[in-house]
Length: 155
Image 1: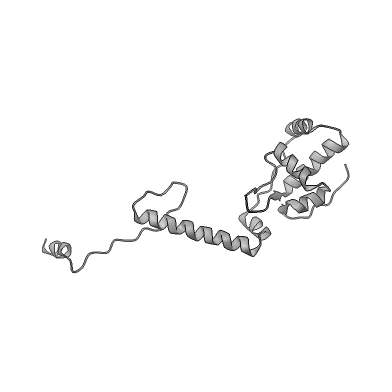
Image 2 (image 1 turned 45 degrees about the vertical axis):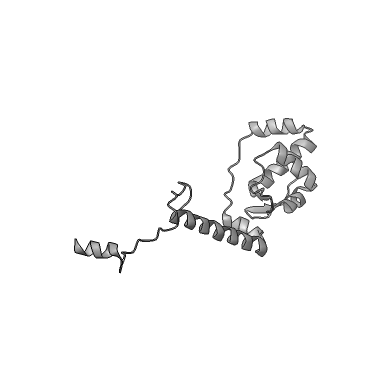
């Protein structure tokens, strides 16, 4: 197998993976459909992001198909038999570095909107999901100048 230089980064765009592996984008998309765990982020509006381990796997798939003459099914079987490589963790910062300012701004707006919804739900007494940290509840202030307050003082 020919040695290919992979830049020392944790995350890559699809176009960069195609350039490194010297394959067309449609080939990479086909391999994604055959190997569902290939690639990290596949959001409707965001770019597909690949880990370094994914790039290495793409190069291995290419070698198995073009050099060893295997079919996609044969390559899948061969990769399943091989020892899985430990994948490097891709952090949110790595993905954020690949996004442009407009996408980051849209994500901030979505986050603000979701926080607002959580606040409205918390004020309405709806219990928070166990997976989402609820905003801090507002403390009830003692009533002043009302009949309830004057009754409380009399007791």
